[in-house]
Image (cartoon, rainbow over all chains, first blue to last red; front, side, top):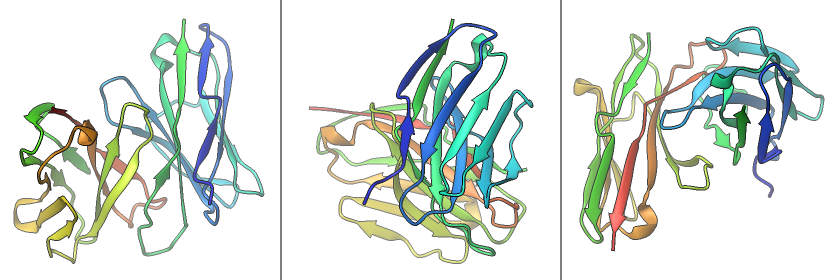
Length: 115
Length: 116
């Protein structure tokens, strides 16, 4: 049973460029959440997708956008990269459940370095 | 607003010692969920436990145990007879299902080093 997968594992970009990160959820999961983890800090919630719609968004600017596909996989796009966007980007998958709280399972992350 | 505090930034112990990682949370809601995750150097967050706010029973899983005290808003994690493989960053997280979208709030993490 494949867990959450993310690609690429590492990425180096320069300021002002755009980047796309990809995530495939754990088998059977329908919800994908994205987190940004700066060095030495806890993960910060970016947004969550279910049924191909953004359901909730954290305190991140519009430069951060996403998409979910019919097969539940997801992309995170970041435009106009800043040095401060350098971080580990984590994808988590779960089952959408109204009234309950399902555990989120995380992928290995994509390490983004902005020069 | 929800908040998770992990006051211990770094802890070092010698192998076979017991160690407790503290977690204090803030929420206005009566229904919520608490989690612990382990992040080894590889970077992937590994799920350890989920606890809902109505279940205050302590839980033990092998060398791991968790003490949930609603009265003090704490959810502490104890590793008994620590091993070198326990070295990692440990995160406590809070989730409120009334937040549309199941958003998780993570603490800053505690870096545990187990020395041989």
